[in-house]
Length: 156
Image 1 (cartoon, one colour):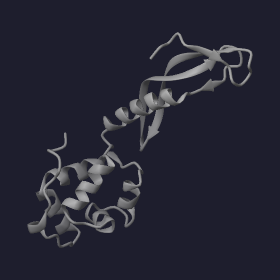
Image 2 (image 1 turned 135 degrees about the vertical axis):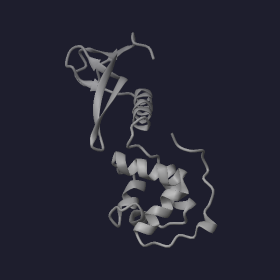
Image 3 (image 1 turned 180 degrees about the horizontal axis):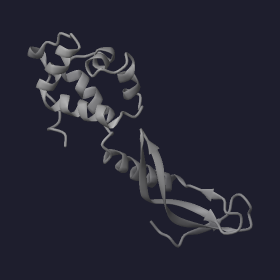
């Protein structure tokens, strides 16, 4: 991205907005997520800030990359894959991992998981014996003869 780009300020109409790089820390679950290299415009006269669509796309990619490196990140696709592999409803998946009744629905709607819950789901997706143990502890019957194979390789 170019750093020498300037545009007229759309707020005060007196200054010039220059593109700048910045870092920001976001709240992600119970932890903080530092993201470097974000981009925006700032006016040299009124200090207004503006983000153009191309900058927003760039910033969103950086944020998603930082989230995916977090130990509490599990993609929506991975959550669905877990449920489909073991033929579970959202309610059953919540019970299996020892969460509240509507937890899986919230997770699949984008609510952040705790790091331990994310690790448990990744382990259960990768190792069926984890699911057997969880099912026994939750007094649940899971038909492992009909377990769908995972779509991905073991999750690191």
